[in-house]
Length: 162
Image 1: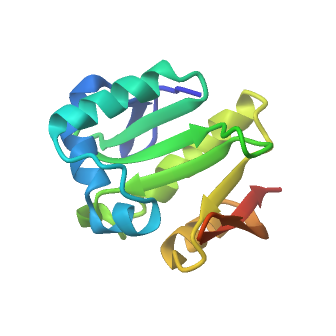
Image 2: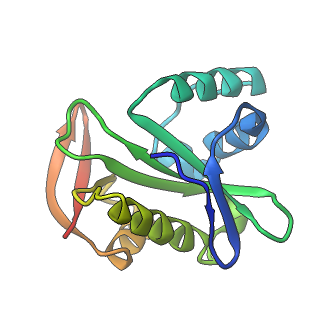
């Protein structure tokens, strides 16, 4: 679900085409490539195309969170209803230079609160078993490990909001 709201330090809004430079940087960061996967975004133009494609899908919701003080985008909080999963999947990512400031938790917890207010309560998250930062944040958000799932040659851990 696309939402537009504020938290104490962040603005959260739907992704826009003019976020292409930010998305290009985020999707080519070490953490994204290692834990989310290479989406082959090699140019700002390909980032624009990626955003256009995401906006055209009724089951993909990419929300940018930016600093209130500067309006600089620092991360994403997403909700994706995958064909292979029974419930929507919440995700988050942020630029490495902003890690450790609590921004991802602030954005994701506020987003989850609004999803619940809109009666979206069965929410899962997928992460790699060695993504310790993500697992720590997921458990802090109230999600618990339910099972592992093979996806081709990769193993994913599934967490669910209880």
